Length: 220
Image 1 (spheres, rainbow, N blue to C red):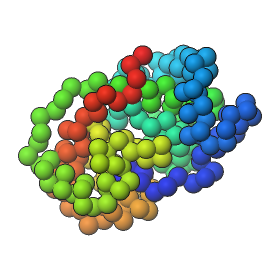
Image 2 (cartoon, rainbow, N blue to C red; image 1 turned 90 degrees about the vertical axis):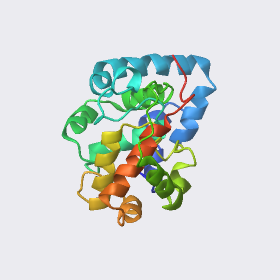
Image 3 (cartoon, one colour; image 1 turned 45 degrees about the horizontal axis):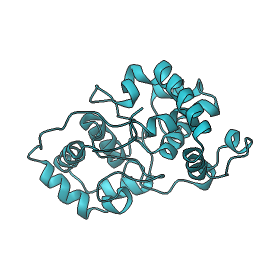
């Protein structure tokens, strides 16, 4: 969910990165960075600079949003972040402010900030379980969500982490997919959510928001 469909192969290769001798796959590239302390330090510093200049005002310090309508980016999967920025640039995902910011970012900045944010811990405080969260858990376990996003809703390199995500952001995004309103486009997500009622979506958002993400990312 929130991007369950597999990412096109063209989105997994980043031209600017491949010219630097990195593996063609973005996922492989990020793994190579993990194994190279010097490169990792450079990317973390560069990514922190981008985050502090362009991201933190809305998404919070180190990607921990304090606005329930703005998503946490801390601990989010790096490949997913890169691909979403590319979708904004191509108009496949619509958000006026984010599309403006995306156009300001050269390729290296996109890769660096995605890597940096993926290594941050989600620090939002634990939430009390809402009564509807039990309904949401049942939906998550039975409505195909678990097959893409995983049992703990942490996703993988191609699938976003939903655990601990902001409730209002989840509500808006899920409704956009279900209603095919055009802001978010993913055929599989629309198909999976098509039969859900507004109450179902509230329950699902409450469940995912309450999961939290203990131990996610790497504190810097």
